[in-house]
Length: 96
Image (cartoon, rainbow, N blue to C red):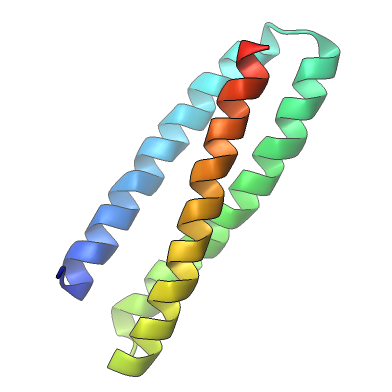
């Protein structure tokens, strides 16, 4: 089982990786059709919103009690899965 610090560090590292990835995807999308760009932009806005939510939860987790941490961890894992799915969607959009 990972500690709170390990979990938060892993999540923050993944967020940084996702930030780099979305920037790469954005450059690829800019070279695509207007229709594809619109689909990409809509989905990337959704992902960015969820990333911001996840970042806020991670900040709260740093200072939370054990019971609050557990609840926040469950919420963050749900967001994590949504974001991961979102990045897979972006890859599909760009490969069409």
